[in-house]
Length: 113
Image 1 (tube, rainbow, N blue to C red):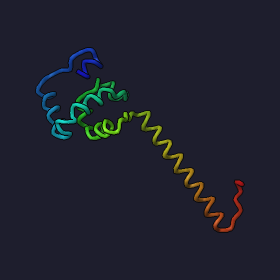
Image 2 (image 1 turned 30 degrees about the vertical axis):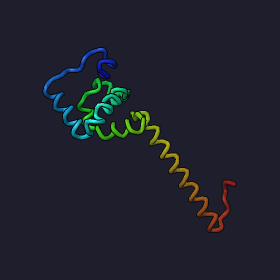
Image 3 (image 1 turned 180 degrees about the vertical axis):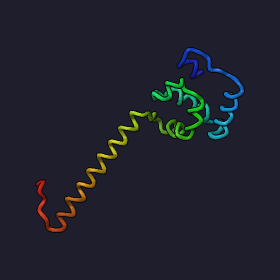
Image 4 (image 1 turned 90 degrees about the horizontal axis):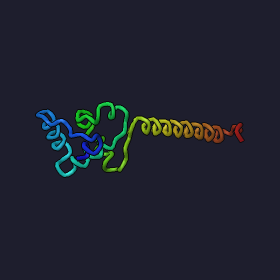
């Protein structure tokens, strides 16, 4: 139903799709697989959208989508880049602070103050 709600069309149903859904249930468990699949359909990542939320993508990253469902997050390319930049900025700030402390401990004057 989540697929039909998103795309206003029923998904293709054939032997391959049935097998893929069976694999998803095997990997995540029958109690949560449908929740993860519904969460996946809310993903607005460009790569996922281009493929109309392909089951191949869901299966390739099932555990990742499970984590996103459990934590209530949706990670897409933009979100990942923002997190990466934040981490880089924190790392640079920590390095700068360590350099200032090292100079202070060595008795050097802090040129920034």
